[in-house]
Length: 165
Image 1 (cartoon, rainbow, N blue to C red):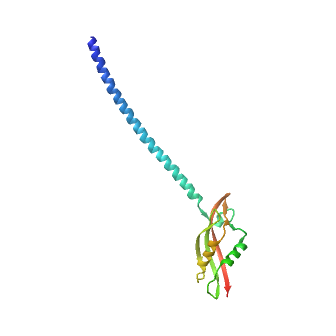
Image 2: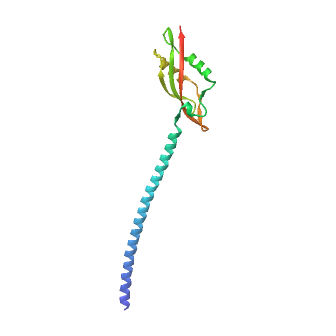
């Protein structure tokens, strides 16, 4: 009988070892599955945070029209000083008479610099290109504000030129 018990114990021992191996394998598989799941979850969370951060960034870089802002952008010194700046820097070229209306559009950035220059209307003879050249020389403006925050704004500037040599 003691031999019988001994054989039984050896069988039980072998069974326990195989059961333990099976349990360990199952546990390792579960760990791997959980680890893969956690990796995917982490990547998903990072992706969501990145997208929401990008959406906020895009929203903050919106360009507002003058009618949409609480405080309009202005040239340091006012409109009359800006007109003097334009007149003193505008070159007419070889034309004897140089007159007409130029309408330009530009963006006043958050730092007050000007960008995205466009000529909407000019009277020829390179007048639009000259107006943009002069606008690019402009010192920084005081930017627009909306809800207490500095924002980008679009500005349409009509300019009448009347120079005769």
